Each structure stands twice: as structure tokens, then as C-alpha cells.
Length: 113
Image (tube, rainbow, N blue to C red):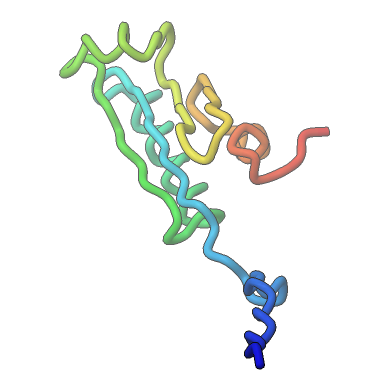
């Protein structure tokens, strides 16, 4: 008499009620020295990240005076420039980042409108 295998349970699916950790943001801010515009951009992005991405971001500040070769590699034509590498899509925001709303839209944290 042949033996029957018990039915295989369906594959486990993610529980939609359990929140999955959001993908961390990888940001690079390109500045030119310790100018007022550069320091303002650094302060602005740090404030925005702490308020909206707390614990889920990595911010790298790159001084183009100290590492000018990186301007060409990343095609930086103006500074300050913020590049959102992850999550995709890649985005660039140019300026001192003083418009929080514009930065949030650029980071895909808020819908533009």
C-alpha cells in the first residue's frame, strides 16, 4: 500500500501588520571648505536627517578642497550638492538645503506638489 506524503504547507508570507525595517539612506554632501554656505548646508542636512531619518541614514560630508578628484568622479558642478545614493533612485539636490520641504521631496520622504 503506497504511503501518502502529508501536504506541504504554503510558503510563509510576510505579515503585513509587522513593519519591516526601512532601507537606510546613504547620503553624500559635497561642500567647498568651511564657508558659511557649506556649514549651513551641513547643519541643515543633519537637522533634517535627525528629524526624519533618525537611525536610518549614513551621511558622508566630502570637502572638495581636500578631495578635488571626487568632484569630477561624481560630476559635481556646484557645491553644496547632496547626493542620495540609496534608496534608489539616485537624486541630487544643489544648494544650502535651507528649504526643508524641497529636501524632503528630493529625498522621497514627501510627495511634491
